[in-house]
Image (tube, rainbow, N blue to C red; front, side, top):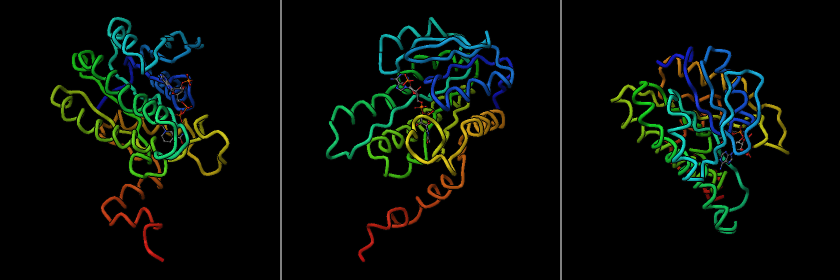
Length: 234
Ligand SMILES: NC(=O)c1ccc[n+]([C@@H]2O[C@H](COP(=O)([O-])OP(=O)(O)OC[C@H]3O[C@@H](n4cnc5c(N)ncnc54)[C@H](OP(=O)(O)O)[C@@H]3O)[C@@H](O)[C@H]2O)c1
């Protein structure tokens, strides 16, 4: 169980849809400080929110993070990109960028802040997706599947030192990442942020935020055609 009251939380991609909702949620639950990390940091109205410049694909910036935010007790790997395009035809630079941002960035940042998390007996939160288990997101799905397993592996490494590792899996959520798609039926970012906070405080290992995500997850134990009917010959 990880209390948010008095916690020092670092959130990557803090200016995005879920990032902003999460910063607001943890402040409302009594966080002492929130490092609102972003490529282009902005001012926040609450003085407990500390803007921090951080591109998670920049190893030099990550090397400086332990000095800038070494009192972090909860790290939230939230930043991600979702370039469109098939694995076979998209520019290969798009494929490598999404793996670098969505998978290697969180691993690098977790390595940099692991000593802080261990000494605080704090928490790591990795924002996965229903697309961790469903291939329609192409390279994004590949990166989120990797993050799912990285989260599981990091849990095995960190739990013995009292660090809670929470994997978050959600379906479509009404944020700029979904620009151009109909928001009807999508999760609200504030609801996802509340579900994450509740799961942290309850000491969970994973939170599957919505029905779609739970359905896709449960289909993983069925033959692959259950998730991909197009594979069944007509
Ligand atoms: N929206 C959904 O339907 C949905 C569903 C399931 C899971 N998720 C996950 O939820 C998380 C938050 O996404 P969101 O929906 O809130 O999307 P979003 O509004 O697009 O936010 C993503 C944030 O990541 C930041 N970012 C991208 N590359 C970065 C980098 N190299 N370094 C630092 N920050 C970087 C972006 O920063 P800039 O502002 O600088 O571009 C942006 O603020 C992601 O992990 C996403 O995969 C989203």
